[in-house]
Length: 391
Image (tube, rainbow, N blue to C red):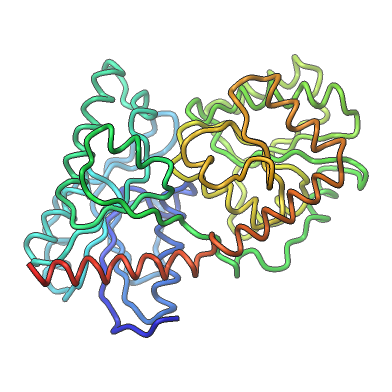
């Protein structure tokens, strides 16, 4: 581990704890690793009604508590209280996780303090246009993408979670150099998993093969496709179960789909699983299945790999940078026949399943741990500060 002068880093994010999803987990993962190395990290995020932070370096902007499809407080990016706090901080660098809302605040304060701005492009915004109600999807998509491109081109350094999205962002107009830095797996969090506990809880026998999906149950995650594909596998393989960790507005319709398919007794919905328990769900399972096409990374893929699971996923941006087709899983076209065939092959061939699982574990430990990722991010910060200072 390289010795560095301790930095003071401000991270501005529209999405943070207790929200359980991707950007929150990414911010928290880097915060922990950077602080382990002696750096000071200050988080600026929207207020979450009813939540009290245990970390004194988390500061909350006022927010509007929205509930469109799922709860997502929207930050109000102007606050005298926050301005007074930021004024007093002797920061070295500002890292923005979004091009809008608190992204505006991040950019404004980087200019005021004359320090570099790093921007992580987390999301393929065209895939999320449907989250803005009452406006035409195409109009929203073009507006969001244009704003993000402009923001990236004004930043001092741009981070992307995986290299597979770089050609897309180039086509959209991002001119800046982009550095792929995935969010790594917190190895401490994945110590001593107890898969037997989960199998006992859901009545899964030792000789049953468990297919696991960890996902938000929403349209952009393409979960209905995964369910329909998995049902085909369950029909052909009587000693196979399907376990789902996650929740969302499609949960009810997916339960109904399970009933109509006649598979209700072999499908288990766990709901949202706490971070300290998710390792047990991976350990209880044999094959990880995933259908999302909207990922820039898909952190749960690296978690599944770290846990030694072979992957069957739709070949898409983000995922295709992590899964090595034919080595630790199968990347397939978005066709139910292809997806179910890949899963079935791993169900019936235990040797191949174990070989792919071992490869997943080895790849994740080499490339996708939180420690490896934090070292890469610190190199990016060093570069941003060095180049900013040489202007």
